Amino acid sequence: MVAAMTSRQRVLAALHREPVDRTPACNPTSIATVELMDLVNAPFPDANRQPELMARLAATGYTELGFDTIMPVFSIVQESSALGCNLQWEQKDNWPTVKMREPIWEKPEDIKIPADFLKHPDTQCVIQAIKILRKEFGDEVAIIGKTMGPWSLGYHCFGVEPFLLLSLDDPGKTKLCLDKMKEATIQFGLAQIEAGADALTLPDHATGDLVSGEFYARYLRDLHIEFAERLPAPIILHICGRTVDRMEFIAQTGMAAFHYDSKNQPAESMGIMKNRISLVGNINNPEVLYSKGPEEVRRDVYKNLDAGVQLVGPECAIPLQTRIDNLKEIPLAIRDWHREHTTQN
Image 1 (cartoon, rainbow, N blue to C red):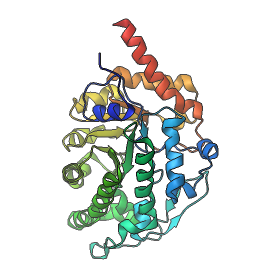
Image 2 (tube, rainbow, N blue to C red; image 1 turned 30 degrees about the vertical axis):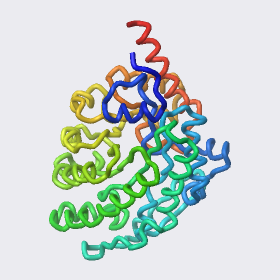
Image 3 (spheres, rainbow, N blue to C red; image 1 turned 90 degrees about the vertical axis):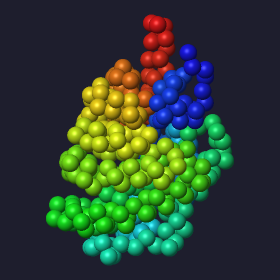
Image 4 (cartoon, rainbow, N blue to C red; image 1 turned 60 degrees about the vertical axis):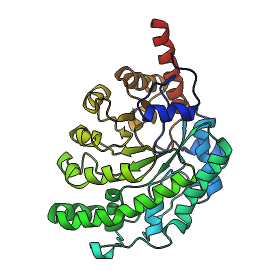
């Protein structure tokens, strides 16, 4: 038996594949909902742009839902905004988005990380929110930051289609672009760690439906190894879609964990990872958390726990209209599973 742990201790131990008192409920992306925004009066778009509101909304993951993590970066656009992309900030029932039909770069020579990149209001918002949360919660709960990987930044700054075509037509230029853009990933990650983040989610959207496993190995494996070496905190890599064709490569990166999609089966994924990297996930968003009820959520949670998945939570940022009861069911089901298995043993 492992002695009782705080949420922060539990998450950090699980990220290092060390013994835990129970599996942590973890949200590496976002569990913000319209219902939670209304509960604490911290709506989008303001909660994406004002540190106090960002911290207040993020804290509900721990205080209202019972997760072991707080993750204040709800969107994927903070860096892109600071790099100069044009954004549509939307209202509380929709995500902010980059206007990808208005690319800011066309070739490697165009790429510039502004000298004031970390002083931009939208990067500062995240940094200051993490400081607020660290001060408020101390060592009680794990605070997870987020820094977008260069493949994702490529989509935002070049446009999805132009960037993918470049990766097909000119590997040399693509690698040069990624090498230049990676500095934004590292700068923002280091700033969040300094502000008090215990771990970082690193989304790099080489998704299964757009990019092959071979392309992941060609373009991103070495970069992800570099991130694991240069960012002094556990990194949770996030890639959507069916990704078993690159899990072997991901397991070689030295990252702490992989946040994986429900398109991948827990037992199958654990078999590939072979305890070289923790798995986080993979409760289905559209068909379960959004469309079904607590019973179906519990079934997904148990499926992950039965397979030995180290941290359990939604597969990606949840739909904003998701019911709170479905989210609360994740930590409740984890506790019940552990209670049942302790009794059986």
